[in-house]
Length: 188
Image (tube, rainbow, N blue to C red; front, side):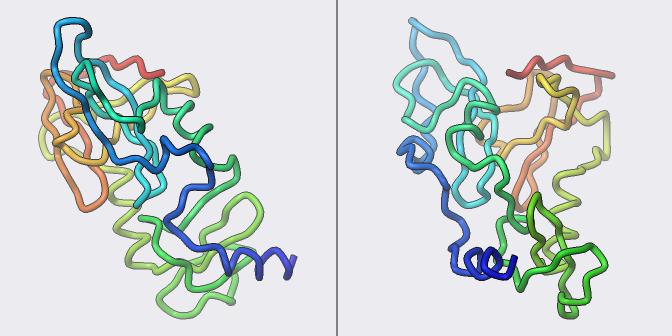
């Protein structure tokens, strides 16, 4: 276990685990064209190590384009990979949520095999952004293969929110709010 912790301590953060060059490419939403209409696709964000939806305009998009969220994660991350909120650098390692190995101002965040001592303020801000509330209307949710979940993107300029909803952008993520009770989104 100690060898695993030492090995993880040397792994730099904010790097994709994949050799797939598409994961390292910047987002290019493409351009409007007559051959193909706009469609929601997913891209891998290297800064946050997360797959996000975006509206692909139709033609000439870049390489960092995946048909589904699952395909994006399968190609760009390891199954047991995790980081502190906002992909911030861990301040140490821990083995239980109440582990006293984490110094003041940090909190133990458990992953599949090991835990990280993560900055508490960053974790709180991160949790607030992945569990957003709408001041007006309802939070737009999507139906994925694994169930219904919050429909979160990276930036409003990526135009991932469905028609009839408003995009609200935070520091790391954006979410969609709708006055309609429910806007059905079938995500792949």
